[in-house]
Image (cartoon, rainbow, N blue to C red; front, side, top):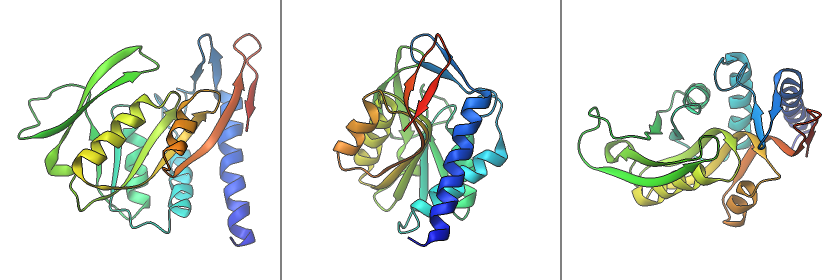
Length: 204
């Protein structure tokens, strides 16, 4: 990799880490609050920089569709879709909707944050065996949501090119589980330790 590319990568990741330290907060139960810039109020400029980094990391892949899950992954995936050349973004829904007609792919996922199991569906019209998919999401903890999305890609017969994650909790099992399956996973910030008493965050 050219030296300039290495500098760009370090800058992007450091900027995200610094933003987490500045505006994030640690709560009991292994919860990281970053709702001021990532998953409630959205810093679109930061989103674009993250998307540009994924574009660089996956530049060798022929990606024609981005997949995420509602709700907090949608904004990030949409910015990535634009950066990747205005490619379609499709998101899996956590509940049956009257707006979805015809056959669907379905799976079940358990939310780490909400401690709830969801039935997740995706219309078969929007994911086919011809698609080369990049999964985008804001967080990776135990990997339940990602495994559900991977199942949907597999059910469709599509090609999973990789996964882009904004923040990975490296002290939980999700990242290792995904990588052990041989799936390409690019997380822009990996947290190895959080202390809810002191608020300290240690990055990999």
